[in-house]
Length: 125
Length: 413
Image (cartoon, rainbow over all chains, first blue to last red; front, side, top):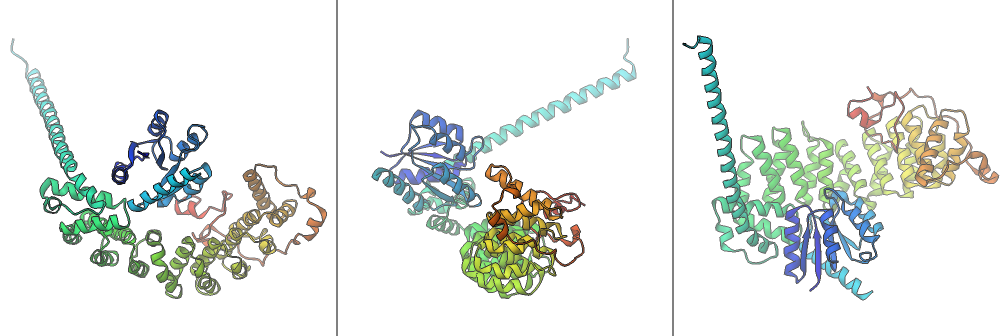
């Protein structure tokens, strides 16, 4: 089963994303901040990460930078979750190697489409 | 031996104090226990209702228990639905809004907007914006223009922006003409939240009243609405300084070289300093080398922000702009300081040493624009003369030239 790590400090967003992804057949793990995300990925590298940008402590961009500088996680697909007001972070995210981004508020159906699209792109490479 | 009256009094006070402390302690413990009990009940109710609400988000059938839930479970279901609604868009949001309408939440919210208590009206307005039905929109429009409390009007304005409705744009723009309008920044944020839905109304309002035109120009620029550029250009030539400045700034954001001519016309020495500063800023955003001569001519302008923005714009343009700055920096005029600052900032941004004008190739120096004569004398800009619409490109002004942001914060006076 394809595993997805959802990283967001907002429990409501985590609930919604987790529910929709599980319903679509993904195995979902959750982390509520950057440090927890780093620990989760160190424990087991998921097939894809949905990563919130603005989080307490280590930010999503910093987490992404660390993953990209580590060869075990450098190729791990990452989709950024960002609020509409933080669209400037999207550019920075792409510079750091994000694969895609989803703007909050989000459409669950579109989110699943993007997750599937990123995973199939990675598999075809 | 009998106790003296003083000792007896002190004893009484001690007993009374101990009794009071005991009562307070008991009260605190009771309140905590009660809160824990209520919190536990609330958590259990949410735990029971959450899976049902999540099923609705996915477009599943709405369970009858979710529609008929009352009391703590009903409140929990609505709390969760509103929390999710704020985080979702698309059909999932429609499903949740439908659920809330079927539970009668809409009718209750509309009633709450008539409450004598402002905080209840504001809370109801915020939730109506999430539901975003035509009925909710109508009531929000009434609150934006008619509520006697400024905070409620602000909340209703923001809520109207979340509805995503084109008609909301018209209400928001026209609210600017009311006797006590909502602050323009709040209206602008709401229009931006509406996004592309607002564009037809914004473009139509470029020919509307003064406040509407200025707002429409600003928001169209922020929305990167390229097809609106001709309407914006029309607004740079005549009308109030506020409208012209907004149009110039928007054209700068769009970054279209076609707008260079109209924007450069606004740099003319006879124009308002706020407009000229905005024009210099806009030319920097466009970044076309054709703007170098008119910008270089502004480097010695007596108005701080005009000269500052011109220097920063030349640095933004780079190439011939940087050469013009190097030549100005080598001089002794008032523009030299702005030019040096702009060159230093450019060098810092590029992580290099500032360019030395003496090291510029001879033919480049020859082709660089000759320093234009200083603009026609104009009274020195005082803080009060430079409206808040002036945008510095970067940096801090020297004493006596507070930035618009400083003035807004009451500094630099």
